[in-house]
Structure formats: structure tokens, C-alpha cells
Length: 142
Image (tube, rainbow, N blue to C red; front, side, top):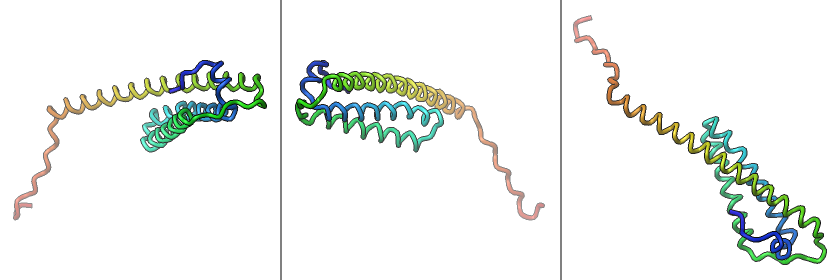
């Protein structure tokens, strides 16, 4: 998901505002990925769908940001500030990757659990006979 460029290329090629926007979006994505597992654990489909929509929107914003030609750095950008933001971008990217791995593992586990219950229901359906409805008494017999 993250563009492949080296730190020197990043520092030399992109504006400080581009780096700050990238940092903001990566932090927002990490937060969204970290909060989504709560919806899975709670079996809250509505919240899960909202979290998924939020993750998609942030990812699309990142894609657009990375595909728009960025302005080059200006002379007013401090090299120390740029290095600090680049370190924060790397940390936020790692945080988002770790949260995504955890979320994916939780979703796989939830899916396996659902498959177990589906197989259980399917196998019990073959042997389960629903209770017979009580036959109404014939007319005249009470």
C-alpha cells in the first residue's frame, strides 16, 4: 500500500505538506484498523460495515495522494522537520500494517468459526425432526 521510495528520494522530492498529509492519512488508517476488531468481536455488523467503509475511503485518499504529482520541496522546509515527519510516516505505516494483520487474522478466525457452525447446522438438519404439530380434534369430539 505504501509507495516504494527511499528516504532520500522522499525528503528531496516531496513537499512538506505532502508528507504531512500522508502522515495524517496513515495515522487515520491505523486508528480505523485498530478499532475495527471490536466490531467483529461484538458481532456488530453495522459498525463493521461502517469501519470497512471508513478504511476504504482513507485508502482511496492515500491512493489519490500518491498518484497526484507532488510539489517539490521548498527552501523553507527544515531538514530536521522533514526527517521527523518521515520517521512518523514509517512508524504510522508499521502501525497500520500490524493492525491490518491482526484484523485479518481475527476475520479469518471468525470465518472459520462461522464455517464450523454452518457444518454443525447442516449435519444436524439431516437427523433432526421437528416436533409434530398437535392434530386438531375431529369435529364433534371434544
